[in-house]
Amino acid sequence: RKIASNSRRAGSGLGLDLGFSYTEGAFIAEESPAPSPEDTDNTYVPDARPGCRAPHFWMETKAGKTSSLDLFGKGWVLIAGSDVKAGPWVEVAQRCVIPIAAYQLGEEIVCNSPEVEKLYGIGSEGMVMIRPDGIVALRTKHFVADPQHYLSESLSKILRC
Image 1 (cartoon, rainbow, N blue to C red):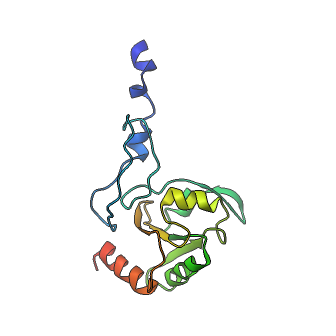
Image 2: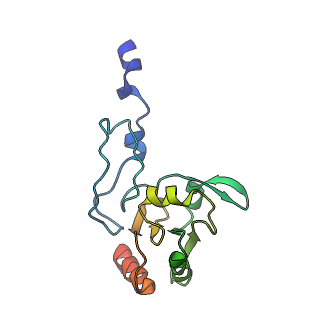
C-alpha cells in the first residue's frame, strides 16, 4: 500500500483527464506536434491544437476575475488575438449563421494577452474557435485576407454541411 500511495502512477491522472486529444472529428486538424511529457497519465501539458481541450487562463471581465473555462459550454466561442488586425475575426463571427460568442484579447477579455496568444498558438493577429464542449475546433496564427470565407468554409467542414 505504501508503494502505491507514494507513486505518481497513483496520482491525479490529470494527463488522462485533461490531456486527451481527438485524432479525428469535428475540427480542422493541423500538422503541429503534440506535447510529449514523460508521464502522460499524470502530467498535463496545456495544448490548444484542434481536437484538444481548450486550456484554462485567468481573465478580467466586468464581473471580476474569472476563468476562461466559464466562456465554454454554452455555445461556440471565438477568441481573437490582441492586434487591431484581429478585430475583423470578432466582427465576422458575430455575423455567422450559427451563434458564436466572439471576444478579442485586450478588449472584451483583459488578460496577459501575449501569454494567452502563446498558450493558444494564435499570435496577435490570429484566432481560435472552441466548440460548445470545450474542444478546440479551429485556430490560425495569422489574419487571412477573407475572414468571412475562411470561417464559413471552416465551419462547413467542421459541421459537415
